[in-house]
Length: 590
View 1 (tube, rainbow, N blue to C red):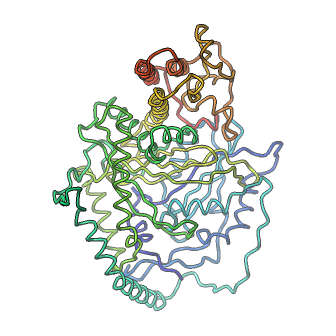
View 2 (view 1 turned 90 degrees about the vertical axis):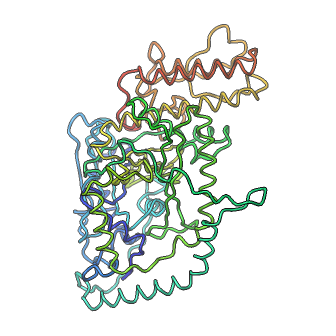
View 3 (view 1 turned 90 degrees about the horizontal axis):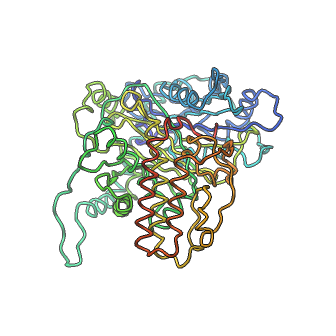
């Protein structure tokens, strides 16, 4: 028997049919060459052999009588693997759009609390010949980093797998649920333990409160006692009460390019992710005549987990951060985000030691559940100003190639939780040289989530081009210009000064050109774009090629080169809106 912490249990108490509180992931898989077996049965057999390696697979909830205290985890001795691991076939033609829509539908349903809180789906029927794995686990059992640790259990580093030691035999209790007296005794013991921890933590709580409430002295030795401004975020169409209908979109960006942007601009990778989301949201709301005058803000989870801690629970807090969408210039915007991020990190450093304290809260289940139900069903979220407009999370993933039941894992798209008042969740996870974005939203609040996802790709390319342009004045010679992800050939008059780029195959459609950098698509093993050389370059490729040419003109003055490059970048961003229907699915499964 293991008591849920207050943070873990909160995800249970906040759950409602309109707001399921599970997290998931979508992995596209390449089957082994010449494979003729039944992949669903192979995957189920592999998970059955490994379920003892992670308690998430074997434990279920035992609720307290009258909801007097938080539930406990107990061992489930009768796990039905046919229920937890399921097989789905997509109807023809099996497009990526269909895959994403089906994942959104699966993500909208609640998990059965009488069983261990997880489900896996093996999805075939994709026209590419690939298969997909969609998994969901209740957030009360894991956070982002615990999910990565769980991935290390079910994934392998080799296609041949690894030898798994069988579980140690133990006596069965043959008991479906615990008795009333046993549960009440556990509740009393847990409350006493929490109260003792609270008393011990009083000095730390006092120090943390002082550091937060008492402002630091400035260079003149004075303290700024003014109240914080703009506590609430501006109201948008995303800040409403949600339904149980979901929509999902996944997009990928090369991790090396994101790191290059961060290095050139002197910011962190997380700052680049926030700036990419900020630029996409700014364009989306501006195109819909809905952009607020004040900046949008994001709710950003902050991990409290120590390095190497894979405990299946939640060790996370949340901070709000400006997205600087009131700033037009993308470079100024990302620098404003960088400054705000550093301030938030400094604040979290002051209070991190007390955030993990498990506070006693009798009758928490019915109290929190009642308040959450009141907030959602009364539609108060449509009226009350939001604390933040959108949830954005960046989860460091596994940086190497992985395999699932012998199949090569191509992608790792996170599928997360929108909530009342925040109908959009953008979660980002790195994997094997990729940065996979997963956008999960309420369908009624954001029916065109794919449009926003495509704007993320456009914003990434804009930031990359501007970062290169920002560094251009410091270059001594054309040879020192960093390589740009473009494949258009240089003009004849520039052959003497511009290094000739490698001849690469170009995407057969403008959709593929927007989904990936062609150079990365060829060099990155995890990318599965089918490339063919068209007769003419797409509008996006031509615009990016023009940007490269502007950057490498050695004879032009530095100021003129930057101005010319930025004009070309604006042309590239404008071209994104005119190339027609953009890709509605992750290109890795094309």
